[in-house]
Image 1 (tube, helix red, strand yellow):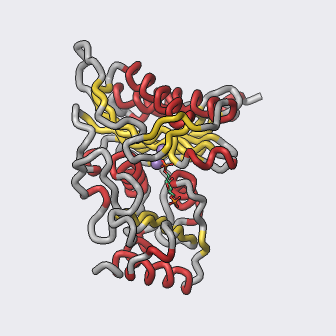
Image 2 (cartoon, rainbow, N blue to C red; image 1 turned 120 degrees about the vertical axis):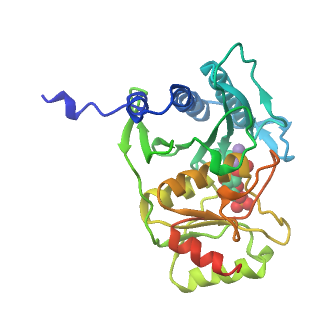
Length: 309
Ligand code: AHG
Ligand code: MN
Ligand code: MN
């Protein structure tokens, strides 16, 4: 039997062959290790409230806290991370750096969409990686980004300057390569409107009406990671979470939701804007900074942006 065709490329060997710096490779790899424990906790653990709330005043689920602890611990374990921002922490966390050379800073959402777990919908982990000691950098400065999607399959998608690649967790607990150099379609067929229609501002109302009139299918799961994943990997299209009358900056956070996803989508040939400027060109000044977002296939993002100019 030709064993070669059965042995797919694992995450670590892909990272080594990609030539990226060892510290960055170990961060991506260790988030992969952490995700296996998050995956396990989600399928076996407590789905209730942690009894605490995060910086945004949102009730934290036990799973949010557990996922955050697991990822924080694995990032510290790399010995190459100096500072982190997490959706579940209220300030920048500084790791003791015993003569650690060339540190990285990491911004992550340990469990995006966590309120969907108890109804068995897909959720994800989102990670942005920067060189140096400052996690509040402009998104264009990212040296890598990744997400893990906990769905019917558990998949890990990363990009570090040279293509976007997908790995699938197999029954042996290995992440094996399933798609390489992913390219998002130039034009798609689905749209995710975001928010609540009665709160839409005129521009967003016109955009949603236009996509409906043009026959785009509405796909919106309430989970940012699965919603982006299907646009990235399948038919293309547009994900939106707009500014509204009740939330002038929209809902999604720049450091650990929008910047990493914008990095991956642009690296795969797509685009991401706040309506006026590319997401990656926005100055990132606060942990809790939010922005409206239009992200996905270039054609649809450009079409949406026209309504703001
Ligand atoms: P989180 O669970 O980390 O707070 O993020 C949830 C986000 C994102 O996953 C999704 O796109 C959005 O919330 C959905 O918001 P609505 O429930 O307001 O549609
Ligand atoms: Mn989130
Ligand atoms: Mn979250």
